[in-house]
Image 1: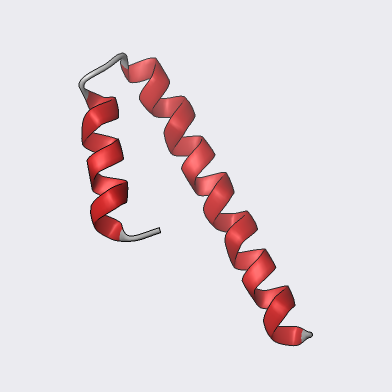
Image 2: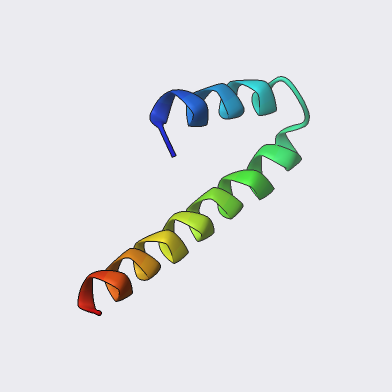
Length: 45
């Protein structure tokens, strides 16, 4: 994901509840880990 789009989402989310931001931040980190794992597996194959 491009950094600008991520920043836009983060700014849009920060306007709402902070509890949601915490959940979404964890979701983003989890998604990035999965994306890196998938990219590594594809490179190995």
